[in-house]
Amino acid sequence: MISYVIRRLLMVIPILLGITLVSFMILQLVPGDPAQIILGLEAEPEQLDALRQKLGLDKPVLVQYAVFLKNTLKGDLGESIRTRNDVVAEIWPRFLNTLRLTVTSILLATIIGLIVGCIAAMRQNTKVDYIVMAGVLLGISTPTFWSGLLIILVFSVNLGWFPAGGATGFASLVLPAVTLAAPAAAMTARMARSSLLEVFRQDYIRTARAKGQKESKVIYKHALRNALIPTLTVVGLQFGYLMGGAVLVETIFTWPGLGRLLVDAIFNRDYPVVQGGIMIFAFSFVIVNLIVDILYAYLDPRISYE
Image (tube, rainbow, N blue to C red; front, top):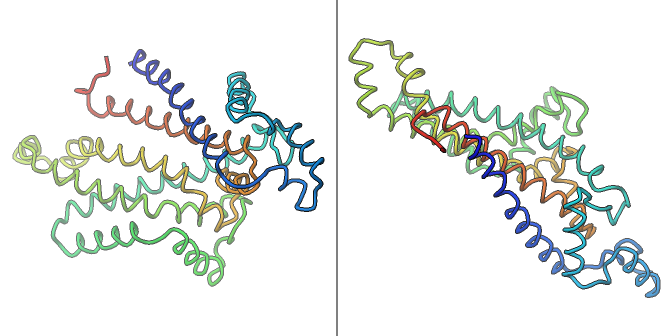
């Protein structure tokens, strides 16, 4: 297992290099001049040239990328073009906020999704199953920006139970976490139901029932653990999607996360901040998938990475 983890971590290096190269080249193709954005439309050409030279924007694209890559390998992501602050200092608190929102959402989505999926599988082809699947379809198909606004209208404006935005405490985390978790919970419930129905058809489940074991023991001891393997894959992928897709929720609820910071950085052509944020998102996604692979071996002893 240790050798497998080391191999996977080594694979992160070329993945991150490829991501930085592609994102760097795409940013260079985006119309707009960072110097013009900083100094304004009325800036003199001499001022623009001086600022481009100071920021290193006058050099060829490949040279700029080589300088960026060299500094990154030293642990230096550079300075923000817009604020002149260290990129790590700007990104880190925003990343922690996004991570807090995402972890809360994925835990909420996993718990609700597994419970709802189990109920639907145990009541297959009944009214309960039909209602659950209708709710799953609604959760998957509802746009996040619309559900977020609806949740604010009901629970903040009308009922006044939670704040409509900001990051002032646990109460301000509830509404964005629920909004972000809703489609992920629907996907998890759908996968858990399908996996459980497939497991229910296996011989060892029929044998356990024939021995007279309680239905709850059959489900939670024998069926659920095997059904969690494909469900865990969905949860791992959902975590990565929630990290990247949190930008909409962060914008709706004015949550000070990394997604909002990246959107502002893209509009301001703040290349170092965008590059640093993309690297953190990519690294987080790879680490989460590594954790999922390790959990496979824990859930199913037949799986070995040696």
